[in-house]
Length: 266
Length: 266
Image (cartoon, each protein chain N blue to C red):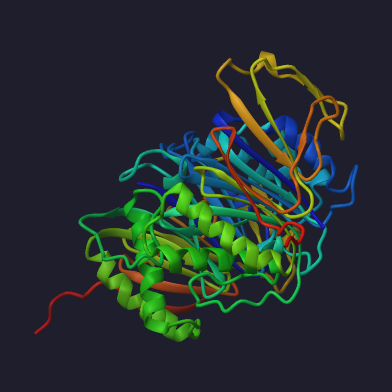
């Protein structure tokens, strides 16, 4: 199993504080030592840092935790391999281009017997269930909407329907972004927090680091952070119910949908 | 105009020495200060570092010049913008996936009135002539060969024909790789060197750094380095004639083709 970290904001924000705690889980405070990666959107461009080494001892992770890259959408992943060997091509997040936009995807879970028919438009480079699911999602988007990106609502509807199909194959927590918004599926375990004024101090779970957000923000800033497990020990994180799909935009929850049938009724 | 750096080897090799000299041209010893990038293949995976800042003062470039990433195929680029603003999405190299392989592309030159019909399979994210040419190359490969990668010879034939068409629009020096080989077009200005046993000392043009390759290599190593301008001042670089397309594999020149018509004959 793996751990996910996502950030969605209304102004470009650096993720150094949250990443410092997350990074420690890759081989130091936790066992997710089979590589890690992080992707930052800056406008339509992306920066993708990948390392098949444990994040706790990676020089690239050290750079990322100290070099403030400001972004409105960030996706990070530390890996504990389930399917696919420990290789660079199996390291999340994955990146593809569709509709002249980069798409970034990271997955936590395990899909069994998920072998959809791929038409060649998006083909996995590695051999994980995760990259296969990502390729199938993008292929399905393109089949459904043709050459032009639909509006947010239509895209969210399509993602909801596709997620239902994939989630039937197993645990499917994921983060997906095209730079406009952050799409999140809580299959089993994810939490989030929205930080906004009045900002307070936050203290990491995994390292003895405190930041006073009131000193580094303005009154208008709003930042949503999503993580497999809460990153701080003095803030109120919201547990995302298993079987829920979310769209975060401008640091807010903008849409939510259930992906798990309720108890049987008659 | 920009500068290109490529490396193709028979064993995974780090590019720290060559990159140190190349990096200095991005704002220190030369004027190419509009961003930079470098891509490393490691097996089928790639690591792509991009920075819209000048390489001479980039913390990411500092990491790359000191962190030995071993690779058989590397493509780097420092930018002096001609078309497209200074943004991350216009920073080379560009990456796409085709046939379940990542493809990396960087361009030095300027293409005028190059607006091919794109079918939506590969769409530029930024607005450079370079990314447009890359998308068109990959689209044409897929149209020609369908869902399966052809053999090296067929691919090189196709690239030759496509390069002739694009080069009619202007200066088109490029580096292209899928991780198996390094494809190089010298439109106006590129040089290369093949280093192999017996290895000797090399001294950079752009920084006072010397490396004794005999201390860091084995007798079987072979490394081809391709650059816009020679990187060292005590080695014999070969100038690649304008209008030539090359395939480097395992550190050697494996194929070469002319892309410019000779003088008229009758």
